[in-house]
Each structure stands twice: as C-alpha cells, then as structure tokens.
Amino acid sequence: MDISTLSIDKIKKGYQLSKDIYAYQCLICGKVFDIGEIFPVGERFFTAEHQIKAHINEEHGHTLEYLLSLDKKLTTLTDNQKEILSSIASGSSDKEIASDLSLSTSTIRHLRFTMKEKARQAKVFLSIYEMIFEEGGDFMPIHTKATMVDDRYFISEIEQKKILENMFYSLDPLKLKIFSPKEKKKIVILRAIADSLDPERKYTEIELNEVLKQIFHDFTTLRRYLIEYGFMERTKDGKVYKLKR
Image 1: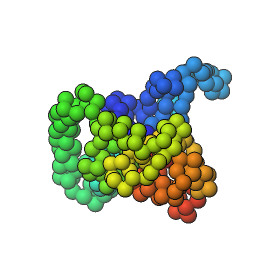
Image 2 (image 1 turned 30 degrees about the horizontal axis):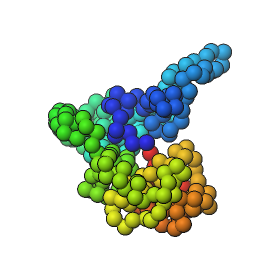
Image 3 (image 1 turned 90 degrees about the vertical axis):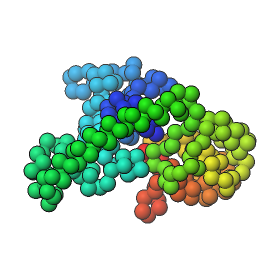
C-alpha cells in the first residue's frame, strides 16, 4: 500500500476505512477488520475500529515506529535524526538525549528547530504541489518502497492507461504481451503485477513462479524486476517472497 497517497490524519492513525471492502485496514500489515463484525475480547465486545486500534498497539507498537522505519526517500531523515526524534518522542529531555547519544545539547536543540522549519516548508510545498498536480488527478503515485526514484516515475494517468492497454492482452486476469525494456512501461507493468498479488501472503519461490507464469512466460524476469524495483522483497535465503509495504 502506498501510504504517501493518504491524508496525514490516516497516516498518523495507522489505519484507514477502505470503502471498497467496507472494512478498516491496517496500513502497516494490511490486515482488515470488517465494519459489520463485532469482536469478542474476554467477556466484552468491541467494534472494528476499536479492534484495529488494539491490533496496531499490540502488533506494531506505535505508528511512529513504523513511520520512522521507512526509507530515507520517504522520510528524508538520516538514521541519526531518526534516533534523536525517537528519543524526543519518548519524552526524554534534550540533556538526557545528548548524554545517551554522546551529543551536545545544542545539537538536539538545532534538530528541533530544523524539524519545525522543514514542517513549515513542507506545508507550503504540499499546497503548491496539490494545486498544480493533484487537483486534476494527473499523475500516478510512486509506490512506497520504490528504488532509484527519478523522472521514470513521472507517469500520467493517461500514459498508464495507454501502456496497460498496449502491453497486456488482458487485465483481468493479467496476461502480458511483452515485458518492455522502456523504463516507464516497465514500472507500469510491474505495478499492475504487484497490485494483483496478495498483500498478506508470503510466497515460496515455486508459488510465486506459478503465479507469474500465468501472467507471462518469462516469469524469472518478472520476479527479478519486482525485487529490483522495490515492489517485492525476499528473505536472505531466497525462500520467501512478499510484497513490500
């Protein structure tokens, strides 16, 4: 799920109401809680929204931890800055943080000031960006774990529609004609394939191969580029594949 396309309020909460499936969905792991379902806990019963809040707290700790774990391309934060911000969030004083991290208190104060300035600038930039690009819904969002982000990801909705029509025999089920070497087409193809996979499933290599074979005969190429472009990840031993979040 590309959380960068969601509102700030939803990102901070760590969940959203998905109208497509009429359920609350965790932004971190994708787990859903149907709105019409009542969840028993001991001798008490809770709504879906209460339960997803409990799920996030029990399974993921705090949404802030997840956000700080995201790649620098999304947060723009260095590892040192993340460490300091995490300490600030825990309620530690500047003096305590400086002592724990072997830094000066002036360094901590400077970071606080820098973060306030970045937030102020971000508000203005976001307003400008939305007025130019998003009011008309012209451009497709970049997936959260994208690698090598550059102008190859600058793809309009019209471009994406044309690429999908030209590159696929069918979109439901997915049947790919050719895996284009052109970067924009490659990204659109990979995004469509990633969107067709189960976000909660952990695939063995054999299982993933079987799914990709149904889409295109050269399944090894699809598998390799899904990893290379940050749509999927695999364990170090190469035995388990899953979508990146």
